[in-house]
Length: 189
Ligand code: FE
Image (cartoon, rainbow, N blue to C red; front, side):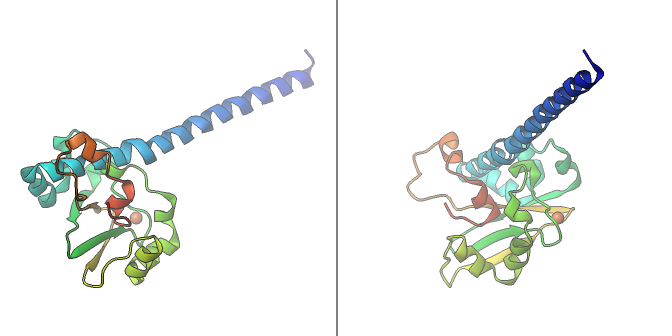
């Protein structure tokens, strides 16, 4: 093999290896964004809907409560408090990080790209009601919107309202109804 051919072969191999590596990273990120993260949060929510004592502990202090379910084991959990805000008939909660992209990793995994956008970060505070309406969530005028600004020390998660007509469902079926966006507060179930 000539030196040129040899170089080309090595180059090709490196590119291939690089592609494999970046695909693997993408898959990992996607997994955290779509599976591990929201799924954990969904189970926390479903548990809170079905177990009033757990719900009370969760609202009192989020991190110890999610540890009961085996979550909160990632780095985020060691540095930040988790504060859970419950939606009711009269109060709707929305989470944001105005400074950067702080997010409750322990339960929701990685934030979606729009959560980190300048538009979301500023509008969530300036005009949350209008932002929510544009996202398809038209809240009645008598519902108070509360916006929670995350930080390195405190991460927020929304406990959405349990959908009507779900009385007979168990924890697993309920968890399947809970979306990531409902736990950020940009969607109602
Ligand atoms: Fe941040």
